[in-house]
Image 1 (cartoon, rainbow, N blue to C red):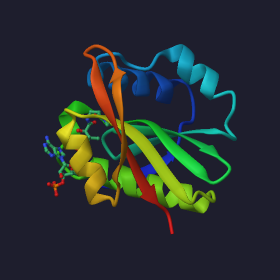
Image 2 (cartoon, helix red, strand yellow):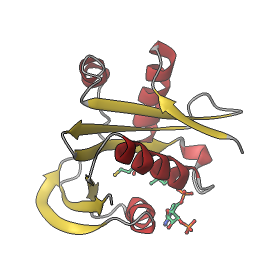
Image 3 (cartoon, rainbow, N blue to C red):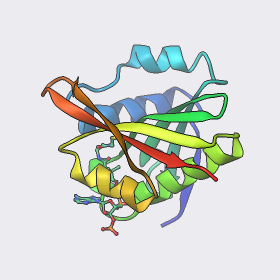
Image 4 (cartoon, rainbow, N blue to C red):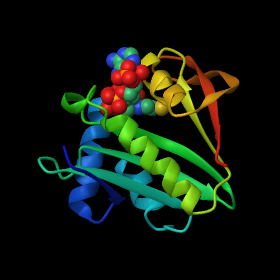
Length: 150
Ligand SMILES: CC(C)(COP(=O)(O)OP(=O)(O)OC[C@H]1O[C@@H](n2cnc3c(N)ncnc32)[C@H](O)[C@@H]1OP(=O)(O)O)[C@@H](O)C(=O)NCCC(=O)NCCS
């Protein structure tokens, strides 16, 4: 399957990202958040992954402040999961943050989200700390994961 990872390019991409958000999270990130972040493209980087069949098969949004990158959201369309797309997207994002000058990459993940934790562990992330009761709906700890970018 051909896969391309590139920056979100227009309203159709944003609609597709929001649909994946809705399908993936209990409290999806809002259109307002994305529209706000798209106004500061030097800090917030939103990438979509395209395949031959799907203009947006998955996406990732991260912030970059000086040399610290932080992934806000990453998801793959539900029907396309388990085929290596998440790994490919994450590898591309790590490469992109390196290219942009990041030396570390962090993110938060729900304690119960075993699939995501395995994905990140495979990509070289490790547990840095825990934020108690960080999430709502349902209330749950966040595991802070860190990956150094040599
Ligand atoms: C997490 C997510 C991005 C993984 O995407 P994906 O395309 O299914 O991932 P891949 O097929 O590349 O799998 C990579 C690794 O993740 C782990 N993994 C993926 N799905 C899994 C599952 N259902 N159960 C356990 N581990 C799983 C495995 O370790 C897998 O490696 P393996 O195939 O060698 O065993 C996807 O499940 C998703 O979009 N989830 C909802 C959104 C989300 O939770 N995002 C993360 C927020 S921090």
